Length: 490
Ligand code: NAP
Image 1 (cartoon, rainbow, N blue to C red):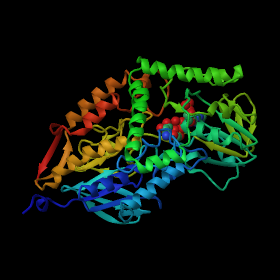
Image 2 (tube, helix red, strand yellow):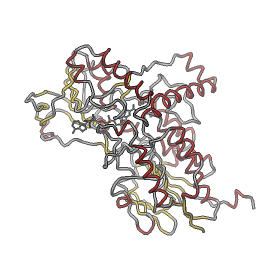
Image 3 (cartoon, helix red, strand yellow):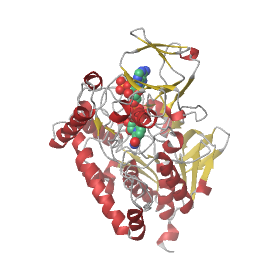
Image 4 (spheres, rainbow, N blue to C red):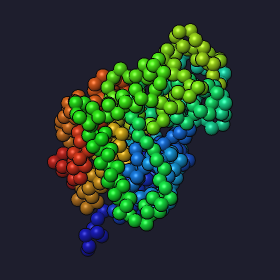
């Protein structure tokens, strides 16, 4: 019997048809696995790019980097691609690799229970399924954080969260308020401030803004990308070096010269591009650049200096039928109020109920905070792997690259199940705990620990991120250290 024939066919269930779920299916098929189902609760794939459709949405990671390594896209229109182009890319790629028939749309997995070396899954619609391996590709920033604002229910205009954009609400020539100054609100500001009669940006915390230009690719460039794969590869290399050396490796060391260079560029952007001294002081952050996720925008300062625009720094006292009353007693009359207030960044996989070995509940395992060994494996939960799980690299760089590294790693673990001699693989609790302790210690040196509030921080105020270099990540994920895992023989 050939070695391949002796292999045990494995059944896979992937949770979520976003960027990483699609990636998982493509790569599993490439490895010869055929028994794969992706459960997707929505009626469309795309994850974050399906859900976020706000005006101005773009990826602030250069497009040629935010692309599967095996599926270049010569047609990206500009350096930082608009959201709808990214959504199209995922739709196209899904079809090109024949993954769409594997997706069960409109099926939300409500529970995954491990018993006798198999996972049993149930969906909200009553489907029951089983799998040898579950890959949770459920995303990081998925559950909108809606602010508890007194009087919100009395507002007579339209109110929605940025990730639930109501495209039926007209905006042109109207009075629009946006709460928040994260990457989302900044992009909305650039897109809207010129279109509306009045634009109020309710700012609780000022942001450092890194001025990266966003040029269009010319038709000649796109044609060259299409005809010469080496040209795309060179572009990726160049962008990769720029993002890794310029940002990813800088943020892990608050005292690094690269971090200083980022701060200088942000400061210069503020000093040179905001004219009114009062506005300049409103927009000047009182914490270090990069502590919160760095805002990348070529034109935010220009947009916020439009005659229609105002930065409101007074706290929001309450919402009234006609608008937002701030703590100084002023009423900001609005037709539309948008909460660009971010997401619950610690709800990985949940609300799906997940029970591992001996009934161990994921909510219980993660009672203090979500953790996972190298972001991919959780002690007590065999044959369950995460893509873009807790504490992974989340700086301003490509989560597609990160997911590809993670998948390479997971596929090597899966291979040990496929050879038929083992039925379970799980990370050792002591190894996972020691890793987490090292990670927490190293994170203290990062820029994220220098005194600001952000979604990068966990409930204990520790940065929930990979705190070492990108190269170290690539090296660590290249080959699993098998002594970190326990295996159950068949
Ligand atoms: P975010 O970074 O968490 O920002 C939320 C904003 O809302 C903050 O300014 C926060 O103020 C404010 N806020 C929250 N609750 C508030 C309240 N009750 N009252 C007043 N202000 C309140 O969320 P986001 O902008 O949606 O971005 C989340 C992440 O998504 C980004 O960091 C990034 O990773 C990703 N993203 C990426 C892109 C991209 O181009 N790749 C684009 C958009 C988003 P404080 O700062 O004071 O807490």
